[in-house]
Image 1 (cartoon, rainbow, N blue to C red):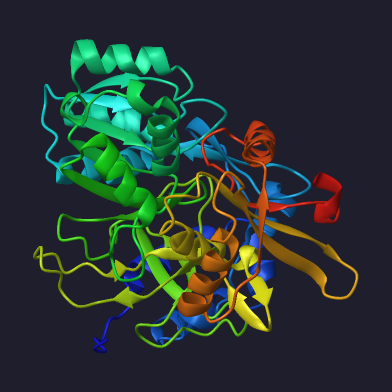
Image 2: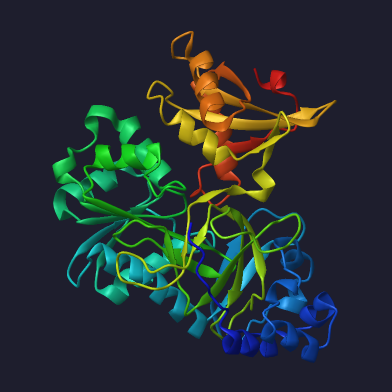
Length: 430
């Protein structure tokens, strides 16, 4: 990938740092005075300011958050100790809604259009309520449906014929496959999809097998994905050129770093996504917040769509989801890309479990209503694509779905778990 010079928005970062300095956590965390921090920014050494992580938000909530004129609270999962509940300020929420509305506008939504809304609006989930407000900003009429209420969804589709749908592609695929021949014909379904809460394209900007299957089963003419997190809101979204996520650079500044060294990664290389808030006020004012997500690349060249904003490649994994297999790092998302090549695999799960020698081990579980040789074929495909393969085991489909349902019940019910940590060796579950 061609190297293109790009400089950080120094003045805006300096203004954010001035505000962040007033929150008790940051001066201690940075270990430098304000003048030294300013010098790092001016000298192009912003990467030398320590990152902040989710555990910091949990352990130092009172020194980082400000209620202010908050109008909502969102929650970020994945920590022990104090839950990370983040107050969202009134003006901050307006920025987040504006960023999310860009996806709907990019898809071609106009006032008077109808939207099938399949994301949760409950349990302090972030994206669902933002999509609802963004739809109203654009002028869309949203029909809010839980994916579990299948009859209600079918009624909305039949009687109201929404042209747009927003949902998690994994959930949308499960809905279509579980209904089988009862699922509406593609010509009766929405034409345009906003995918959220799950990736839908790979490092080469091609649809993942799951997203392609959803596109086929739903008869979609166009799909776009958006990327963000509860801590900082919407970070970027696809355009119709499908050339990665356009960063919302009026709201956030994004870096990719090596999570081990903390240094910026070379152009075109994968790295951990680090975000700095550029709009204020914020309940949580992020200065180099390390999300834990691994993006495949960053590109600063102009896009074919005409925009000149930085673009980021697909999220290919999380640093806490890294699997060490035969000494190599493998991300579960890459494993599921391979599994997507096998339509015979009706359900699958990556499980990580204690191992007395290795500390942890990992296996791929696939439903056993498949051919006897499928395990070997899947392993061979992983070796071709990933150079290594975890052990592939056939298990009852009901077991996979039971474990997923239990994990979803303990979360927000929106993100479908695909990597699960088991407290005991796998034999205890079989």
